[in-house]
Image 1: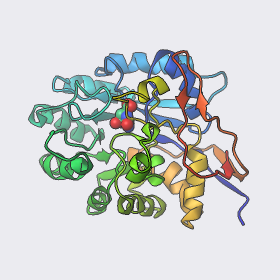
Image 2: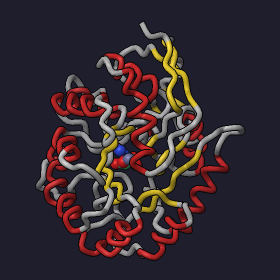
Image 3: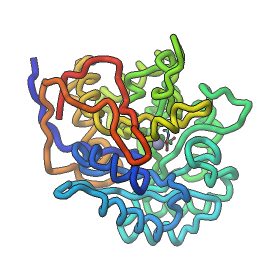
Length: 343
Ligand code: NCD
Ligand code: ZN
């Protein structure tokens, strides 16, 4: 039985670090395992300009623990007023690595997102020209569409038309939750990839709703039925370069989650690598973990893989059940089984 596994240091291609006290509390948990992360721009107010992204990057660097080796890869939040020149400038400076599309109202702090997709066509044209990828929160927001169907409908109504209108635009479907999304990614040879979260490899919608409601498993896009979870496991563990890790670790205080209208998001930064090692081992695919967490992402983003390595050991980890922040505790995602790999 394999007792240890050494892989190139992983990166997280979709991460929420927040700001201020929360940033200081959660950042060490990502920086300990991950070398780089694509930083989500859905702050309040959102990170919409290059200047705001530079200032946010500086706040992240200032919050890093002494001696940490972590590089935040910044993104801009796409709005109907985004200036293509500002985007191109921030990209040319090496400051930003993607632009994030939130359909207005789709998720936490997405009110400034896009309602009329025609209005962002000039930005998307420029991004296609300069090779800057678009990260998508792939859910429609129409109230008549069932929440469990919103990802599949997004592909047909929004994503496919965008990709037809901008054929050379590179697109990352973020935190996919359905076999429809995995199939759509596979139906394309280049320019399209998807991130998969840790929690969507572990939970289906029963975990949220059967036998009592479990707010700590509620995130967006919401976990779907078991067949979809199995399709995601298959995609993640296949080694296919179009699928890679984006934890979508999204911390909210317990006070904000345990409410009549609680926030969406699972906090997986501390135990992601332990959970992934177990998932990949269960599926007989430990040899594919490095591709998923350390190789496929940089290849798609046109960056070199990390030169440093981490070693996972077969040993019960000691992750806390929750972390303290000045605003209250944040519960760490509980995979529902004992973990036996540690970093
Ligand atoms: C994210 C958050 O809290 O910012 N929540 C979530 O459920 N994933 C937003 C997002 O990525 O949708
Ligand atoms: Zn997210």
